Length: 425
Ligand code: 7TS
Image 1 (cartoon, helix red, strand yellow):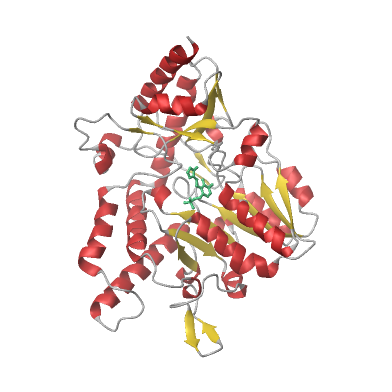
Image 2: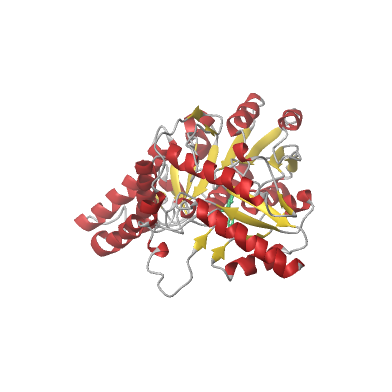
């Protein structure tokens, strides 16, 4: 496949002359090695979680073997070392997001917790009856259910921006909606079902013009395309480490300083306080005001290593590789009779492809493929309202990352043809 110049989320154009050496990259991932006697693993569920390179696993292991102590409290050298590693990881995340300061980078467990933090700590205190919360029809439950809770408790109203039949958000309708008082626009940067890359910089610009706050769910985008908070200018942005080669149990919330300053703490207890008296307490400085209790230090260290790994390879090269896989997958999947892909064309999406094969339930398909060593996801992908909009109860979904190869798509297509013969005769 030829290398090319993909457009990255409306931000910049990267010409990639130097394709990834995927065979070499796969050597870094223990899960793809040492499978003697077992089936070959064709892992096509990267939108759910990604595999971990040895350097990330080693960074976590090294933390526990050599640096383990609680942070921000010990007066001894080991605790200082752990604190330095933890705060160093925050600085790596800051630079990854191009944020002006690491004091607005809050470590959480995952994107879900980051969004809940915004819902509880900020939205409950800032949204009112008469406000609307604008979402889109393609949100993951993580960026939908918390807003139902906020709407119920504050009297704000939920509104959904429609998606077109091509799986894109309708910006004209968004502009219309924004004429009414809007407390928050919460939108995904990229859909975990359709793969659509949304023009969030444009959404943020529109929202700001009408005085609305904006939250970007970057759970799917941060692993694959540049997420520059100066460029996108969101009030809040959330993502998870585990979808970008990092450990499970570590996530990030970026927010504008003013938003974090006007928010109440989300969780209360140790570390988030400045001083405690019998009846009153005062809060710690940012970002620790939002990090109550012992944090996932090893997770943060592992995430920093994952970011370094991605940066060593180059996000532009990774995206270009994935884009080529998407193009190839579209080409090959079109050979399967009765197969329908949901969402936009290959040039407007991430490496996420949801599809159905007429006459075969997605769960049956996933089980059939699993027996051939191919891991795909089937179901509603935590986007039940979107399934309703698409008129299906479930889809089959494949999703790529830097270690996937065209021959895995060939194996998938062979297995899909076999499934058609098996189920449909
Ligand atoms: N937002 C989007 C767009 C997502 O795709 C997901 C997870 C989340 C939020 C929540 O991330 P978490 O790390 O807090 O769980 N998406 C998926 C998926 O598509 N399959 O499994 C998890």
